[in-house]
Image 1 (tube, rainbow, N blue to C red):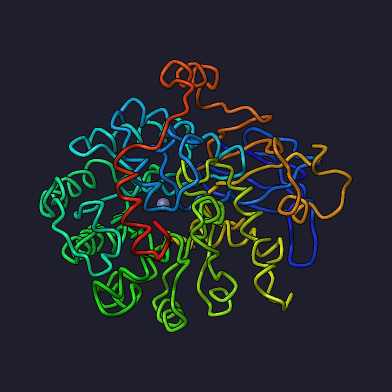
Image 2: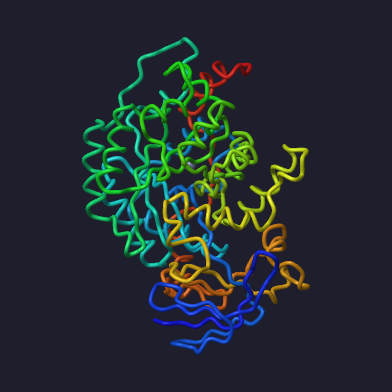
Amino acid sequence: MNVTIQNALLPTKTGYQTCDVQVTGDKITAIAAALEPQGKAIDATHKLLLPGFFNAHTHSSEMWQRGAIAPLPLELWLSELYSSPDLTPEKIYLSALGTAVETLLSGGTSVIDHLVMPPGQELEAIAAVVRGYREVGIRAFVAPLVQDLAAKEGLPSGNHKTDYQPYSQSTAEILAWMETAIKQFHRPEEGISLMVGPTGLQLCTDELFQGCITLSDRYSLCRHTHLLETKAQQRLAYEKYGHSAVEHLSRLGFLGPQTSLAHCVWLDQADIPVLAASGASVVHNPLSNLRLGSGIAPILQYRQAGINVTFGCDGTASNDSQDILEAIKIGTLLHNTTEPDYQHWITPTQAIAMATQGGARAVNLSSQLGILTVGQQADFVLYDLTSLALLPPTDPVGLLVMGRPVNSVDSIWVRGRQLVEAGQVLSTDISQLRQRFLTTNQWQRRPLNAATAQLAHHYRAVMGLAN
Ligand SMILES: [Zn+2]
């Protein structure tokens, strides 16, 4: 359907201007003052129009444990996460709906879902998540999360190498179902793209990474992985390869403009120019890094080196929210404490560009997404500037990033389809979603499981903590 957005406030290089935006089909076809309306006219007086944000790293299916996992470092937190065996396709569908809706209502129009699936039910899980994202209408990039090493291999051995159990699927089996999934679900023209998503060097063989590169090249898919989220992973890379993880990804040929790397907290100084030269993007997940005690990623250094950086919430049990605007705020302000030269601090305008253009670049779609210009996809958000959190009128972009504007999203379009109107989601039944969440899970507080306690002993030893 064609839509004319009238009298919206748009940021310019030096300030703001009021103008109209014409959407024809799924694209922006005109931006000017006083356009002749074609199709539905939307009065956007006192509304700010911005391109939609990217929630560029999450794991939607963790939603069933959000708020429930104790404060633990990643390696022990993962043991808790995987101790809950009852992830079904139905739960995966519902958590996709929940993730999509929270992302939308905080200004996000695209999500990169590094999808955690029950082993042996991967195709059903991908079908479920795709069904959820199609229903809501958010633009989705689904990277099925794969590994071919057992969980304990993800920790440095500290010279106490033991024989671990092999992973439940072979590398060849994993690559085979991945190719089936790509053929079945990769539909970029319909707003659903698949990516290759090896979880990270710590839990994957070189063969799995090479297989993912082959699939990425064969089907023109973007690549997504975790990189150096924790200090333990930094140590493990040197133990396994004798060089840094970035060096290893570079030697494997995994890095490129189609590659996005979640976290990047523990890079060596020498890794930064390697990453910059590759054209790969960094996805900054500040809240997850705080929650798991992973560290503060040196985002200002990356930006100065010319590396593209965008924001993610990270999984729903390591943040434990999918409010992308909150991640943008923390991810912007956090670095003021790490850099005395305030001229390098991230401005609100730069933060918005990172969340929009930066996200588009991370999925290699800068020509189609991330900026409000004629010819781009109609993925954008109107914010209600009469919301108390955005008043009195000052600099709305500054207040959006540095304030706390909850419930300020008025309307959203993705691919030209209106998904939110007057703060209400149109595309899915929210009261029904609430009911299904209530009847599917229970209020709980659970003790640490035995496997985590056992792993903690080893973790504490190799990380130099008193046992
Ligand atoms: Zn993650």
